[in-house]
Length: 566
Image (cartoon, rainbow, N blue to C red; front, side, top):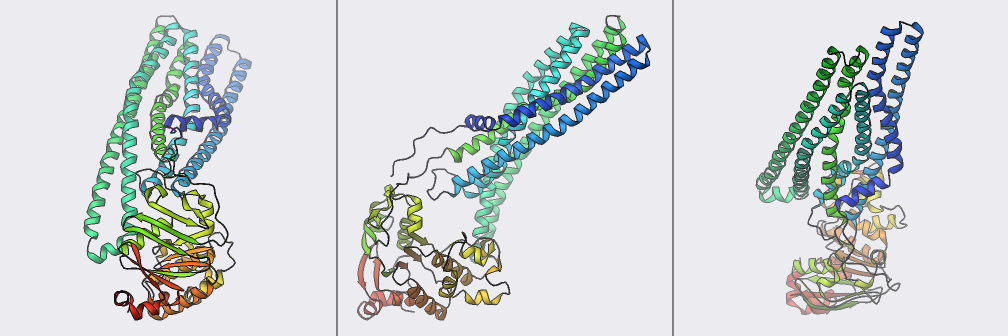
């Protein structure tokens, strides 16, 4: 179960090859149509030169009409091929970007964490901007090939007029690509660094939003803002660097293309003046020198986009190739089984050992909050089994031998800081829409007053992170979600710290009643919850030091009385 995943990592080149392979049909059609577009664009000045030549030589209205009809066919081909070619390529691009976004998000949301040193904000940037830029390779390759078609057609046409004109285009294009390939590599490395810094800034924002209230509480918001300003400034400076490199690339490409077009025009003019080409060929050469600027621009920009796509693919590979912290097992626990902690050593826990029988309601009073957090982390499987000594057994099976799906279906650990999502009260309580115990969970968690307060009831809109709810309402909503899951084993960690004493008493009784016959563990210091438990385990310095009912412990244990009495 705990053997790390040793699959060969998927580098950026594999990601790009995968994108190209599964879109080859769309790319083939897109390349054909965009090739027709570029060929038509290039054919326009060729046809115009032929029209001029035949008109001056033959002076035939029929030939002129036929030539104009040919121009109409070329223009129609150019218009339709561009429209449908770009439609095919952009659809494939958008679909491919969506696939990578889903894949990166799936890796980030897996129950078993991946061994990657990235924060949630960074993963969000990779799943959005980097996924989009990687998918751009779907458009880049067809545009690169179609631009090459235009350059080749122009070179052949000019070569037929005079071999020196064709060679000038070929040699000039090769020289331009050689110069720009150097700059494109710089763009790739600069873009990768920019994306990394933007991602770090995004992660800092996410941290600030999460901790804004406590930061305001102790006056740490100004220091936090300064910290964000620093990473944001770094991202800005890197963006300026990338913009400079892009500007230098675009300026160099435009200048070189203009030089080549000018050279073709001047050479054609000299050849016409010397009588080596006719007027029609001169018109064709001048027209091609103008039209070739666009395919040359596209052709020279493609290496830049290839490097950007590769840089983004390398960042996606950081997430997609990261091995899971552990490899889950495949076993399933016995239905209605017990929960056993056997000599667990982790963090502040020292040979912790206890058993909760099936159907029992057990409360754990932890004198040190850190010990409670460590126990909850082990039970929720945030800590891989090989990171602690001892064993945790659910239904007689060790936690490391169980599949993630089996653990989630059998045991639910509800943290004290459960997330509230944008949506409604109902979708937060029952995200899958399959629970049959939503009304009972709402009543047991005393969320009824929140439901009754709003005309929409359970369909009342909830903002992201429960921004329009009080702390107590958010906590009760999280508790209602845990109860509505109706799992065989339920572990609650401080579920009532933000509610008043009267509400806490009612919640304690309701939870005990609703969970009767099902295994329930509550890590708490609440007297109300301790009192309704079948028994209380006292957790002190990482071990169980006492075990009895709440009232017996109050009567005979002074330390316990001091720790939990309110």
